[in-house]
Length: 377
Image 1 (spheres, helix red, strand yellow):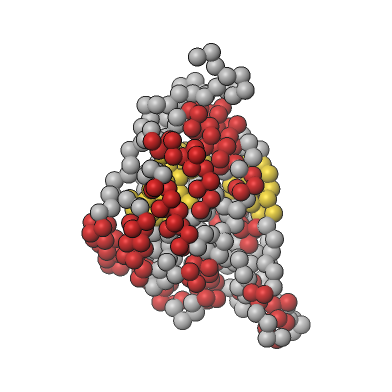
Image 2 (cartoon, rainbow, N blue to C red):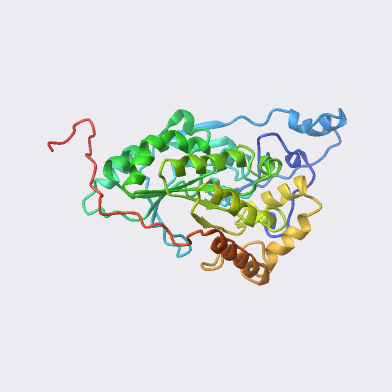
């Protein structure tokens, strides 16, 4: 297998950026039985031929998205990490069409025998019975509501949600049960569900965080090709705040020399839009994410690539990634400390609360197992 710490991909068609995709590299996952390597036999590839014709590779259509429906046995996932401030999570989708090259969830596609590269953003698994399984879980004898987050791994409001409405069906069950939850998204589609979210917010049952990585639309198009534009995410913050929903901003991941210089400006813009809570996580490059992100750097910011990775390794003890609890979200060393200080000072100056909003668990009531049956009272 390639060395995930140091190897960067050879110059092949996989390195050519395609419009609307974070990568088109079908990188082999760590469980693969066979590893394929590209070989230039002199005949060229479609991307090379396009370059020879002075055509932009961006003009070629990217790989199409395929949605795979899955009926899951369970939908609530427990969390045992002390670095994460919730106990349970729901992810209605596996994979994410937003195509963020840095996404720490990419390696999870390996468990499906799919590539963490292009498959992660084009082979989307939709958990179509998520609401049914959630209802069963909440009706289980002895169930006690815990801190629950929606969309912690892959975005619950990615493009497939417009048609499938799985996330909305999950929120309908949570609303019916008066179960508190938080959610995080890069999508403006969350506004569609304000009819459910706003009344729950009035009861102290919801907090919404919008992830804003950069205010630069050109950088956002390359870094998060199918996510909402930065100005649109700011408008979503304002829409939610005006509806009475407690909103926060995630300036994550913070990437040295890429979006890190914008840290204070993003916090200022989000606060002006209505965000009152904030958090930030430094870049994480577990498993196959490391070569995928390094490929992205070589494609889009080659003049900064070595500098970025040198700083990443500096805050990870000389490696591209350190998975230890306590440091994996924040990093270590001088640069990580300086960034934390900048973040904390900006939050204090702007009036952000650093405390997680306490949601009310006391209102929980198990929903009817058969919603069509109704109740006597």
